[in-house]
Length: 127
Image (tube, rainbow, N blue to C red):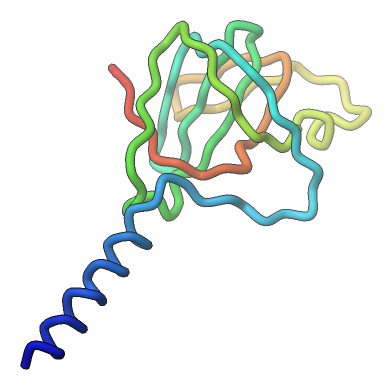
């Protein structure tokens, strides 16, 4: 009986530790880079967090699979480091258009550079 309780405790402990990690990393074949940015605004929709930086860059971070992750607290005006995949060069190519990001049906943000966060995290911030 004690052995059975010990095994149950061990399984619960392992599930808790693996289920409550801080982040997940996307394994893509694309080259990523680390950038340090100051966050000016944070938006979110059903699928993504959208970070607008002081330099008017956008960093998009997926919300897929974050339900069991611990929350990383963010404060506007602070500098943060992101491991990102540059996307704006891939999208724009040689086409000349006004770069903008559609947050939802009513909000469109113009941007200078567009990045996708390679690290998936759950973020908490003051709204």
